[in-house]
Every structure is written in structure tokens, then in C-alpha cells.
Image (cartoon, rainbow over all chains, first blue to last red; front, side):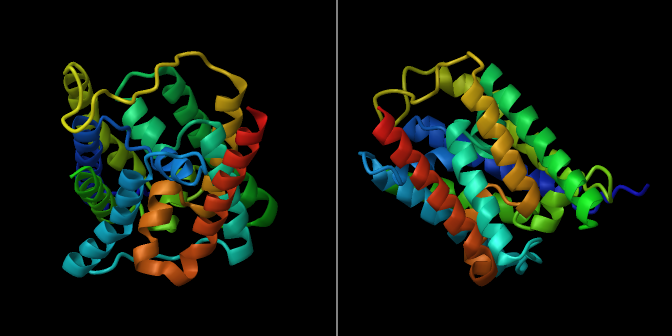
Amino acid sequence: MIIPMDHALPGFLGGLAIGAAATFLLAMLGRIAGVSGILGQALDPSCSDRDWRLAFLVGLPLGAVAFAALEGAPPVQMVARPPLLAAAGLLVGMGTRLGSGCTSGHGVCGLARRSRRSLVATLTFIAVGMATVAVQRWLFGIA
Amino acid sequence: MRRSVALGCGALFGFGLALSGMLEPTRVRGFLDITGAWDPTLAFVMGGALLVTGIAFPIVLRRAGPVLDSRFFVPARSDLDAPLLAGAALFGVGWGLAGLCPGPALAVLGLAFRSAWPFAAGMALGMWIYARVRGEAT
């Protein structure tokens, strides 16, 4: 089996940038850079601090556009048809709120705080994600 | 000031996601596809991010508070409960199906809005439903 290592360095450097962004947000605003929490609470009608949340969320695509302008757009290709994408999004939206976080909040920030809840959540969603892809492959032959 | 800092942090986060290859659902799914052609990139991304946060977070949290607010807003819970596990599992299914999690799902709207919007719309709807249900329960 050949393991593709072609993107290890940009992956690592991108990870450093993500970690730096999360550190700045914590040091300046005292907030955890968990995208599901920032978006989910902004969508809650009772939210009282929507201003910095929306600013962070607007920054996400702006940063991606800036990267594409400098280095060229990465090859983005969806792996599912729109109805399945929407259903997957629904699961991710409800699941991350119920589970108090996603890859950024639990993975990048929670593990850094040595949080037991974040460790268990991260191991769970990675394991279930792997199982989902494996089941899809075996049942439907989808690569 | 708070808004500008948040915008800058979001932009650096989005830039990092694009650089790392995590806006490419094929690559993320490749990491989760351990029975197929496994792509280790996500592990390097996590490693890079945790190298920074793992060292910097404890140092930052030792300070009295953040620069632009009165205190740190950091979860204090350490108990493991059913919602945590069930939520993480539901998230894992959606993540595996689409190769997108919340950060990349929003950042990628800047690059491929026409193909990626159904996921972001479903995600926002799911979060909105959660907020409604929880708001009515309390």
C-alpha cells in the first residue's frame, strides 16, 4: 500500500496557521475557536454576542479566497450529490451542537486544554467517520 | 476592535484550512478511508495545529484574562455523558459522508459556493433546530 505524503508539509504548515488563529482568539477575546460553537450560538435566537461571531465566520471564506488568490485555488470536489450533502450537513449541525464541538473546538482547542471530554469526542467522531466511509464502501461500492 | 480581531482570526483559520488541503473533501475522506487509499494529510494538519495550541494554550490560560474581555470563556466540564457521545457519533456519520466539518464547510463557500452550499445550509438548519429544541426544553 502506498501512502501519499505529497501534502504532508502544506498540511503541517496549514495546521500551524490554524493553531495560531485559535491561540490569538483565545488570548485576545478569551474564546475557543470552535466553529460549530461560534456558528451554532450565533444562530440561537437568544444569542447576545453575535458581532464577533459573525466577524470570525465571515473571515473563514475570506481567508480561503486570499489563499486562492496567492497560490491558486485548491481542487475542491464534493464527494456526494446535493441531497446527500444536505443530509450530511444536517447530521453535522445537530451532532456538533449536541456533542458540544467539532474538529476545531474538540480537536484543535480541547485537546490542547487536555480536556477528557474533547479527547473522547475526538476519538468518537474519527472512529465513526472511518466506520461510515468503510460501510459506504462495502455496501454501495462508493470510493 | 473585537470584531476586527475576530475577523483576522477567522481569516487566518480559513487560510490555514486552504493551505492544509482540508477544503478538499476528497482528501478528508481519504483520511477516514482506512480500507482504501489512506491519505494521512489530516494527521499532519492536526499535528501542526496541536503543536501550537498544545504549547500556547496553557501559557495563555495562565494569564488573568484575555486582552479584550474580562475573562476566558472555556468549558469547565470533565464528565462524559450521553449527549457528548451521541453528538460526536452523529457528527462522525455526516463528516464521513461528505468529507466536510463545520470550519471547512464555511471556508469552502468562498471557493466553491455552488457545489458546497447544500452542506452549509443543512448544517445551519441542524444547528438552528438544535437551538430551538433546546430553547423550548429549558
